[in-house]
Length: 456
Ligand SMILES: Cc1ncc(COP(=O)(O)O)c(C=O)c1O
Image 1 (cartoon, rainbow, N blue to C red):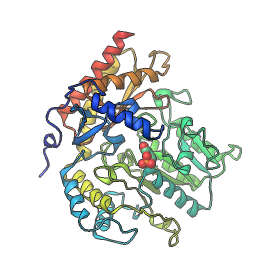
Image 2 (image 1 turned 135 degrees about the vertical axis):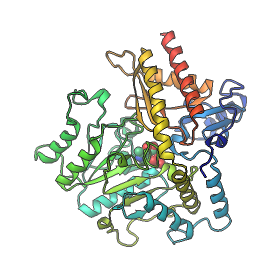
Image 3 (image 1 turned 180 degrees about the vertical axis):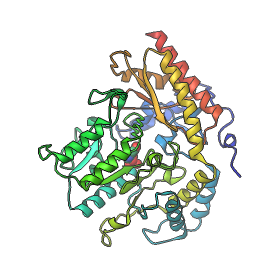
Image 4 (image 1 turned 90 degrees about the horizontal axis):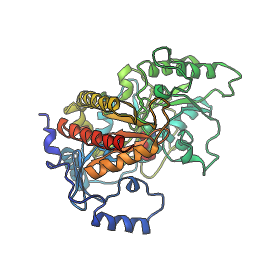
């Protein structure tokens, strides 16, 4: 029987007892900034200390309860403290918690469940280190080993992680500038970011010229780009600003990779597992990559685990070629299998699709009424709102996105900021969010935008 999502969250969200950060949160934040690394980031945008969380709601240590449109950066798809997943973890905890890559029942359960939802031709699964970045590293190594080539092509606006290989494939200069050089021969091409088309086109007159440009680069001996091992693409760009490309983009990239004998790596770390309204975002167009990366919500309630799935013919890593102490984590296998079961049983993809559509149409109203919202967009429950100083010039405004996050936080809504210019408010709620909470969250966002509009 499907679970009533309402019971999964705190009943009284949003509830602001004291403007955040309250005194207890302040104490935690002060301690953290005095003793932890200066690299700590999220608490600077949403100053608070977490106490507990349930479903699509989070309580801070001062008793404030927030609607969560952030979900730990897209991790908590089945909801904080999901009871099915917690039960599976508790059961596992008393039995076995570490096993390197020895088989065990939970590991097998997760592989079987994964193979049940992956495209059939992605018949092999590999678990490397626990983070999304680790999955990207595994995918790149597998592509290099199978092609004997090392150049790679990624997309402008991409984010694939922070380890050296994954960082090389991420386009944000801020993340890389102090650590160069990284991997050699990584090249970036335009993504289908139609609001700011790199080629100056608009969707009405464009024939996916950005994809054609990739074809051109691979064709032209004077493009300056050596034949790559792989093209690495997010089927919906996440950190780049919740950019869902036009329908034909992914199939075109697939065709171009096939034409040139290049592997296609689809990074589903953020867009995967029902977030965009299908199990994987590439399922919207039946595009099957050669290698897929997965992480984030794969660990059920935030237990770290990552994986790649790939085609049988790529299964060429010799024994021990790519290893690590945490090749998946036993508790995360148990959590992941229970989480995936929950997603399927409760039809979270359908829920994400329909709720995402109604949230997006509410956000489109905000766009229409506001002078500072350039575009509201996204797919399923992976949504974004791009802030500009002026709708005509589209001059990006990271300041407004930051301010709207602060106003939302004070009113009891957690949102993330991302985008090429850090000017996109990003919504990634747990997929178990109810229509009521989603609507209330959008109202808080709309009120905050209205306040900013008025203040200008
Ligand atoms: C699409 C994508 N790939 C890779 C990563 C890196 O994952 P992690 O932060 O777990 O290393 C992220 C993280 O946000 C991501 O969104």
